[in-house]
Structure formats: C-alpha cells, structure tokens
Length: 341
Ligand code: AMP
Image (cartoon, rainbow, N blue to C red):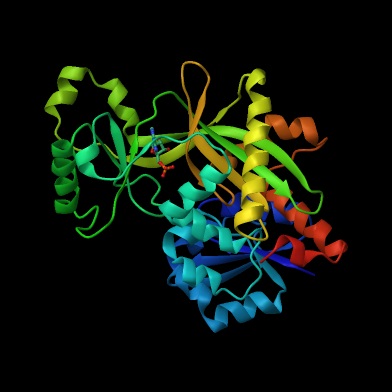
C-alpha cells in the first residue's frame, strides 16, 4: 500500500492527518530538532530523522521512501530550502507536477505563466531608476516575504536595500524583483485541480498576517516617521476569508485559465493544489502578484473542512485529505502516474 510522506514543516500536520483519515500510512522527514514536536501527533506512523531537509536527496532517505511505495507531498519548505534542480532530481514520486515548481521559484517564468493565464498583474519595474510610484521589492523564490520592502524612488530603494544588506537579510549580489504596489484587500485563492476528474475545485480563501508591515497600522504616523527600520513582510499566520458570492464566477475563471495555461506551458499541467495570490481593489477588481503551484500553508486554517468544500463534499474535507483521496482514487484506478511526477 502507498504511503504519504512530507517534510516536517509548513502544512505537514494537515497533510499527514488527512492521509491517516484516508487510511494511508504516513511518513515524516523530520529534522532532529523537531522530533519532540512531531512525536506529539499520533497520526504520524514513521519519522525519518535528518539533520537537514536536503538529506531527502540521499539514497538512504529515498530508499526508505521507495520501500514504502511513498508519494511525497511538496510544500513551501521544499521550495524554500532546495534548488529546482534538486527538487527535480528527487526519485520518489512527487504529488502534482514537480516541473512547475521551477516556474514558481523563478520570477521571470512566473510572470510568463501568469501572463499566459491572463491574470491581471501589477506592472513590473525593470530598473530602480524607473521607480515613480509606490513599489514593492521582492526576493527570488519562496522567501515568505522576508527581506521584502517598499520604495517610492530610486534613492529610497538604494537606502533600504543597503540597510538590509548591512543587516545581513539580503546579499549584495542578490537580484531583486520590483513590482508596483497594489493596494486593496488581500486574498489568497486556494484551488485543487483533479486530472482524474478533469475538474477544478475552489477550496477557499485566506489572508496572511505579515510582520511587521501589519503592526504599522497600530502605530500613529508621527511615530512611524521616527522609526527608521525597514518593515518586512514575514508571514506569521493566516486567517479565513469568505468572498462576496458575486466574485466567485471570476475566481473559477481565473483558476480555469491558470490550469489551461499550465497545461500548455509545463506538462503535465497544474495538477493538485495551487493558489493565486493578490488583492481586490475598491472596484472589486483583482490584481494577482503571485501564485503557488502546490499546497499553501493558508489551507491549514481549514483542517476540518472549508466553507466552499462543505458545498462540494458531505463530509469534513481538508486540503490534506483531498490530496490523500486523490492518491487513493488514482491507486485504485491504477493511475498514480497521472497525478505524480
Ligand atoms: P509574495 O512573495 O509575492 O507572495 O509576497 C509576499 C507579500 O508581499 C504578500 O503576501 C503581500 O502582502 C505583499 N505583496 C507582494 N506583492 C505585492 C504587490 N504587488 N502589491 C501589494 N502587496 C504585495
């Protein structure tokens, strides 16, 4: 029987609980320093203890995963801690499309795919000397918002960049990505595409709480001006969001377009969970600054099922359980190759 494995961080608890609920063996690749934490959860059948997650590439780890006929569920930690080459070299079958993770990690590729999917995006700013409006400056990869900053001019950009280099938060030769700042209500739209059913499901929406940009709203502007620290966008947690029902049609269209674009650009397409991230402005127009081509940690808020999944499933269905259900269905139909890469 197949086992479900993942790295011990991000959304591992949800993924493994979902697998257990579906009657599937669970394996956690766990850093030794977190062994005590994860041992608290009875639904984790086996721990593979490692000093660092890159050991998932070692023969020893891959052998254990292979012996258990495992499917590895990728999440943000895998992308943040490994290069695209390393991820692509993993021999254990990866749920979804491991090739599309490179498109998530690389800003240029990301923009290409989003354009192909017709997602309205903030204007990219190619050179700091072209900064005329408020912009956000980002790092490559799934940095989780750490080291991001806002700027209103080239001078402002240079001052803040230098300060972050001095603090050791970004490196001197790191290429930064500049994009117009889009103001509005943040919304992270979570989907699941099943290649077995050839159907797109909208799972839910969440908001991220990012420090310390979010804390600024609690500080009067005079004090903000005296504080010279560059605010960051480090994700601390997530909370649920339910959208106006009149927005749902467009949400599905964006999801469908993204699945179509991924099919064209990066075979076998956008299989499994993904997320389109952006803001709604005052006219309820969505601008998307990002996508994640795998499960996002924002789904953790719906471990007992989301509002939208309660409309589709007559049982509590988390994203972790949905993934496990897909693996179970594929296994029964002898179609595991359709849902893994
Ligand atoms: P990202 O890594 O692109 O998901 O960005 C991290 C965080 O930065 C997001 O969760 C937003 O809070 C913020 N952000 C990113 N891009 C933009 C943008 N173009 N306009 C406004 N906020 C943004």
